[in-house]
Image (cartoon, rainbow, N blue to C red; front, side, top):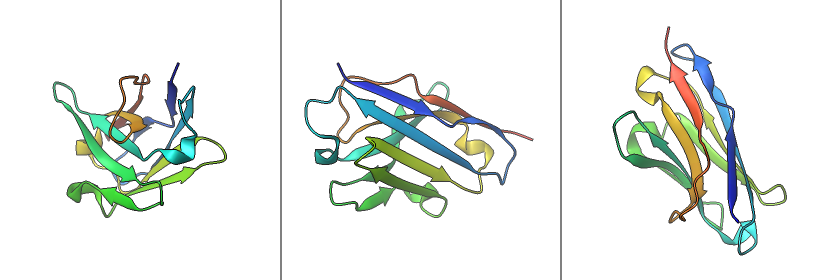
Length: 116
């Protein structure tokens, strides 16, 4: 079955940076045939898509994060990465990866906490 394993989160001070990674396995098709996204969920809120990358490597971002988030993919390693700079407290959330549109299987996510 599909497994999505996110990592790289942590506690960082405002203005800091993080690099989140997601490794996918058990996919029905080759990793390179999927568009991928990073989603985040604030406490008590719905999960939202913050960044996506197409099969052709075109990236899209939520307007509010576009200047600070960078999504990338490594098709040989079945990995999608999210680089975040200039973190602020509003970025505190659990971050998940999934295909776009998302499939039914979610990983455990990785917690990002931005606090001084």
